[in-house]
Image (cartoon, rainbow, N blue to C red; front, side, top):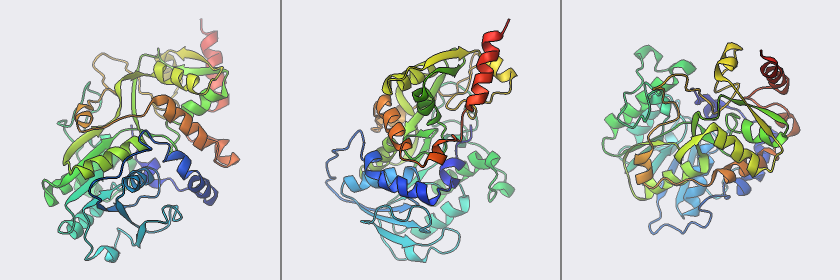
Length: 375
């Protein structure tokens, strides 16, 4: 269930970056709260990162509320974004001099899974900020297969020798270690958010984008399982607005930030995709065991899907009640689907020719033919 590396390691080529920048107003500002009123008390916000996927959504939400935003990064990813913001250049692996002596109300750490980054930032800033917001991951939870997992669940363990690794197998452990470091270095002043699958415009992983794009293409669509398997995700723009709300209200603690509010099934997701783009797609639900026997991989070959093969498995049923009580809100799924397709249409043709996740058209046809030909 790893979903870390795509929004932390995916490198945009120059044309994608320009297309993304040109479409910024049409994607970030297409918000469920596009007419947000300005905050009563503007904050001095430091964002570590801020120019890739979830970072721009946080920055955009903060700017629309009237906060003063400073970005600290290397200036290598989409440096043209947010010309109205102060930009400090540096490197979390050694050169943080630009942050020395600066005072902020809140620091928002948008991307890292390296404990050394959190340790150094927290030690440098803890006497100069009132709140440290860290975007972690549900992979910090040791066992996500139990139904209704909440914020009290056991955390993923990490052996000391893996703390500086980049192996995806230890991603959850590294995120958990980052959380523990914040609790140790900034007790009572840390806000930790654990999203699962983050979706919407500018998501380079295609883990959600596959479905709107595939359904919009029409024809017979291979759909996994019976349609009753649950799924959970959050639009990056909803995550961004929630982060800013927690900063304004100075809310500390740990939150599972997944949606939607009510249980969502794969059938509802794909039918919503179809309705949102007025597609003539025909959904063919293919048995889970049939797919697994043919080495079709959930989560990669068929994104946003983890099958519930046995009673008691709780993937995609995480408890988000604490975040809801703190003010987490969701835009309609139809809007996320439409905005994702609108963003997708701005990308270069060669990028749109090959989704990074999901079945290729040839593989999908092969599987559908085998399914229809079964005895």
